[in-house]
Image (tube, rainbow, N blue to C red; front, side, top):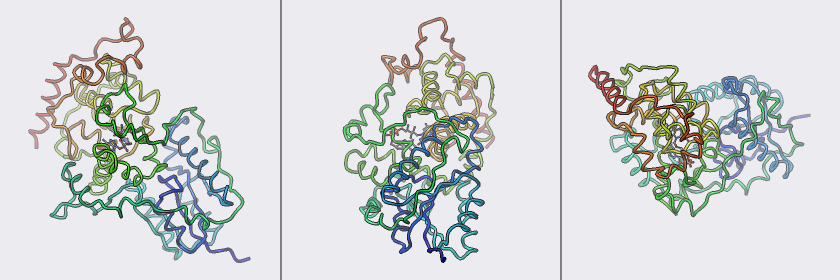
Length: 437
Ligand code: FAD
C-alpha cells in the first residue's frame, strides 16, 4: 500500500501547540502533520545527574502535548537517540514531503540542523525553518551602519522602534489542528526508558499574574519576595510563547518588557559573535587575567559555605531548587569572580549544570557581565559589596534566614576572605591584565 505523504514538525525548544511559528506553517502546508521530538543522546549523555529537572520538565511538556493530541485522534512521535540515526528511522517509516522546525541559535543546534538539513536535501525533502523563540533575530535589529548592537540601551531603543503588531501577533494554530495526522497514539517513553529518574520537583507555574507585572519595578530586586515572573523555564523550553509575553509587557509594564529584550539581546549577541561559544571572553583583553582558581574555595562557593550570607543563601537556593533570583545571581557571580578571583567560566559551568532555566546565551551574558568581559558589562572596578547589597535588598535578612537556618550559630563559617583585601587583589589582577592590551 502507498504510504500517505506527510509533513513533519520537529519540536525542540518550542514545546507547545499554541502560537508556534514552525508548527503553524506545517499545519498550513496542505499535508497532514506528524509532530516529532527526539531525546538527543548527544545532549543527554553529557548530563551526569540522572535526576535532572530539565529532562523531567521536557518530559512533562511532551506528555501534556501528547494528551492534547490524542484527544483529537493524533499523536506525538517521540524517539531517543542520535538525531542522525533517528532521522534515518523516520525516513524508513514515513513518506515525507516537507519538514518544519524553529530556529535555534546555539552552536550545537546550528551544526545539528545543518547536518539534518543536508540529509533532507539529499532526499529532495524541503526543510523550512522559522523564527519563534525571539521577537527579533539575526539581522532584524542592526545599527544605522548595518552592524550588530553590542550595547543594550541603543539595541532596546531600536527594538522598540521596530516593533509593531506584525511581530507581536500570535499564530492562530488552533484553527488548523484538524491537519494533524490521524493515528493511534505512539508510545511516549518513560523517564526511566531514557535513563533518568523523577525528581519530584514542583515546576514554576505557567500563569502570568498581571498584578505581579504591574508591581514588578518596586519588588523585582528583593529576593525574599515573589516579585518576578518565574517564567524563565517556560521561555527556555518554549512552553510559553514569547510573543504572548511581549504583548503583556507592551500593555502593562515597559520595565518588564525590557527583560524580554535582554533575552533577545543576548541571543543576538550569540548569533553575531559565535566566539563566545568557544569559551572566549567577548572582550579579548579580559582573557589575559591570571585567575587564582583555588579549588577548595570554589567548592565552598558551590556549597554555599563562603561565610558571606547573601552569597551562601543564593547558592543554597540554586542547589535546592534549580532557581536563583536575578539580583542574587549577580551577587554570587561577582563574588566568585572578583572576591575569589576564580575564572568566570567555572561559575558559568556550575550554573549551566544546576539552573533549570539554563540558556547558553543568557547565562554566558550574565557571567560575562559580572566578569566585566562582556559586551555591555559592569565596569571592571565595580565590585559588589555583599554587605551593602544585603542592606539594600534583604534588609530584614528574610531571604538569607530562609536558606541559612544556622546563620547565628557557631556552625556558620567565618568569611572566606576579607572584603577590602579581596577588592584590592582583584583590582590589581584586572589592571595588570588590561595593561597588556
Ligand atoms: P523576570 O524578571 O520575570 O523576567 C522575565 C523573563 O525575561 C525571564 O524569564 C527571562 O527569560 C528574561 N530575562 C530576565 N532577565 C534577563 C537577563 N538578564 N538576561 C536574559 N534574559 C533575561 N536567565 C536565563 O533564562 N537562563 C540563564 O541561564 C541565566 N543565567 C544567568 C546567569 C547570571 C550570572 C545572571 C546574572 C543572570 C542570568 N539569567 C539567566 C538572567 C536572569 O537572572 C533570569 O532570566 C531571571 O532571574 C529569571 O527569573 P524570572 O523568570 O522570574 O524573570
